[in-house]
Image (cartoon, rainbow, N blue to C red; front, side, top):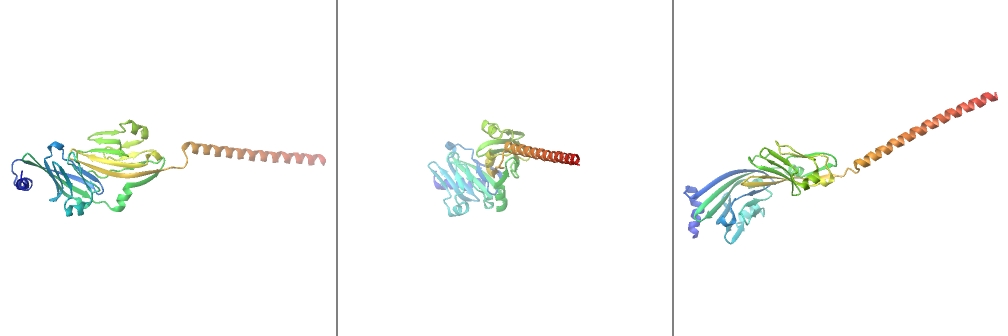
Length: 285
């Protein structure tokens, strides 16, 4: 296929609505700082020639023997090493999203004379630097509880999965909720996790120092997946274990009891000495 025919298939036929051009469109909502992967749902042997565009700027291409990202200066300046291309599927990942990434990401696949065209309308909701830092770093004292808020999730029909240091710990799929389905999670958290099905928020009760780490939320559909690092949690040692606190309380109570006993003994002794002295004085008189 020569370059003129290829250009016609990629650019002219979709605009004219010619038969053989399949166009699909989907909206994706993310928060600034999220990473989002736009899936192709195409196997490697079905890719043919693939192009990715952002608002008509070519940002990636795949041919039989070539993978290329941001060959144009405008793409390099806008995305600055924040794009990743899956060599097997051709899926495109935009890392650490910015509000300037809002727009149409168009995937074109040319295979055996047909054109498959998909548009992802990506909207990036802005977050202030202070809010982003506050969301990502939190500290609690050991024994306290903390609730992780996923924020607003506008994308419908998605699976929400919570991870702790890449270990899956909770999942919401449709009207089903699951917490700690594997042994590693059960052993670590032991019934200390609570999942709100309506909001997607996750509560960690009676925190321990071993709960310190990265908590991430992944929002997944058949067409895209969003990775959101919600929090880097630090659980500070309270300094004393419950057993140590109980021991200290016991010692204090015993010391108070001993002091009271000594006080009563001395008081009784003084009283006895007084009566003895009074009796001696009376006898001498």
